Image (cartoon, rainbow, N blue to C red; front, side):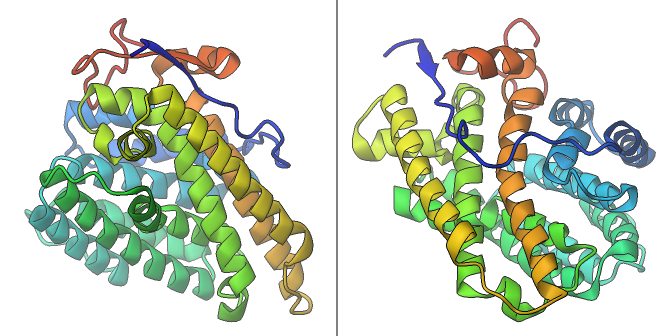
Length: 344
């Protein structure tokens, strides 16, 4: 097996360019101060928070949000990260307990959490107590519904990890549409909108959402594969799954993902250009912004994979230019903290 591989540039023809929210640095600082105020996180989690740069991913994926709503998006990314870091080292029963705490906090955002409870409950409560101040009723409803589906799917992920189960390609796509957190992220696109259920639930919009979700986790898995295989969690990555099912090596799997991504992009653009339903104003204008937000999410997520340091360390910009990656040896990378042997 070669010790290098090439990450195809699957978004070279994507309609949506890189954009970043002008409130990025200000909101990032405010969100970081909020997280530090809990004083209850391990140094490893704090290192993960810094490497992840939740302010960056929020600002790339919600470039047009005002300051208050960008803060909601930024805090949501912190909640994702917190749940991810704790659930990744827990069994299914422990993750289910976290799920119960989180959902209770979302449904009761004005009620302080019990003393001694897992810190994720209070983090989630404070996130949502602030977030609902600038969120429309429809977006609040949709967020809680989709967030509940997301964290419940992570319980299945934990069970699969415990049993060392490598899902099939088809199983993986089905699970990732829920456990990747993309659907609640799309709900945050709606914070200032009042989209009726029949718009977001329309078959064309649902298919558009599914196609974008698939593209998002495909590019995420390509960027994260090297780190994940190094610290032993690469079994839940599309690259490993394709290697296992198609009996190919890393580059063969990367190429398969690139071809599949191309098919998804073609379907997405066909719907975007020809099949977006009309409901009349002012709904149509809002729906256009929502759909463009989904398209931008695909771009912003890809950019963050290279500009942030969670997966590729400080080598991200260089890898984005050359697309070549050197395979890390097993257990070289710590799950939380430096991604590369040189500390980058």
